[in-house]
Image (cartoon, rainbow, N blue to C red):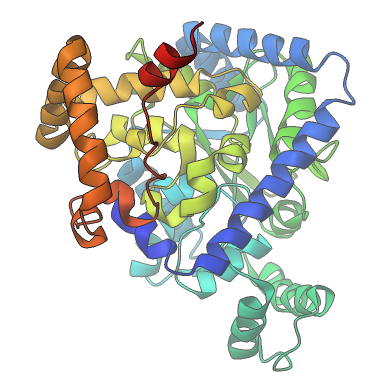
Length: 452
């Protein structure tokens, strides 16, 4: 998996790449404007960060509290060490219910565990009910963004897709018309499902309840009509107390989409009579990340996507270029922890500008962790080409004479050499950039002439 190669593929369509960049910046701008309407915004971020610090320091005890209180409420609690065990637990519940079709709301964790293809292998139909997720499911694609799963598609492409899959009017790109067609299509799936699956945004240790946040109400529609609700939760999603929830709900939607609050914040505490609620608590590398002192803060993430919306690399290279369930800056920290070799290029897909850290609602030091991963990856796998060039540059910068001579030679060479030699295949920097015009004199020469 190579981020540079995948990004090059995305950038072949320059017009679409530009549109993608501008669309995500529009969302980032909404986040800025609405956050400025909250005088205590920075205090909320600091408080959320401290709450998460407390969670990570006491994760085991909070999980035990959550399990005990959830079981008191009548919720069936399962534990999964990894994605494979998570999928096996889901399958066992479905087989016990003799269920052949399920509806599923947006869940990054189930994407992480590759639940859909696993269940389909056993003949179970999985219908993603979030509109963006359903769109990419029709295309047999993963989401390209954790909040805006189909952000890489324009409405004309969706119109063509719906004409093929839902038999809508060809060429009709009206969003209201297309959404209504999807609504009619999904309503039939909701009514026929015995089991509904959701993700979890927050689990409350104090009460044993959990909270699911959506903008479409699809999670509620699914679980209220189904006999069995399966909730899939990463173990880091715990909050200590119910009153802590107010801090995070104020931060989540504003950071994600620039809206005051998510449209539906649904609390699940106990099953209705005759129904079942199962919750699966999943590790899948989280305790390993917790043990990494430099990277454990990444587990504070509340999956708002703000770091993606602001990142100049993500905006210009698209979510698929990362090859991971969680793309963008935060994904570039989480993914190497799962497989350093496979995701070795991701921490380098950053300018280290710090904009991701600036917008993070829980104050994760994202750009610093990306820098740390670069050090770890270079130590483990090495970078011969970059290492050699850095040593050469270090030698030149350490010697004023070498710096002066090499600068003079390079200026002369750039004026004389043809573009075919300057922009050769080894000059990856020059693939999409032109070197500036060579100055007539150096700064040192200018200074000596003008210092009086």
